[in-house]
Length: 128
Picture 1 (cartoon, helix red, strand yellow):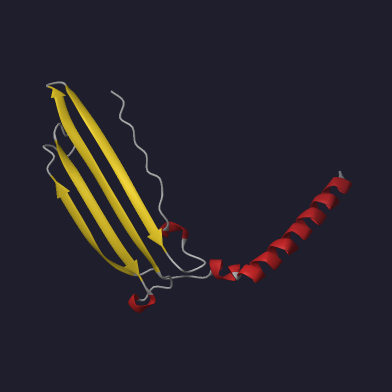
Picture 2 (cartoon, one colour):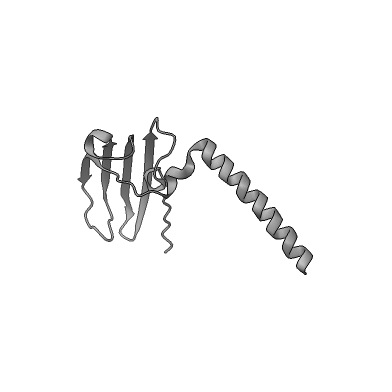
């Protein structure tokens, strides 16, 4: 049991040294510092749905364009665009057909960006 522990400690010790060398080479020491993310943008929403919670007809469109820049006080420079939409089509008094879509674009020249800035996948299903 002691031999296994010493091998594990040696392995993790060498792994830690390798991680330290990689982080110094890539300047990953920046990851543990406090940062500020400041942005300015435009948000446009258009909604013709007949009901907010249970729509049976209409559509909802959203667009958001944000600029994060050092000139605005941000520690990171990047741009983000998000487009989304939903369409509700009545097929009969008790059946509706719904479609939804989402597009996200992210652009930056910086090597390291805060993880919350990048696009994400958002899925939702409705089971009746």
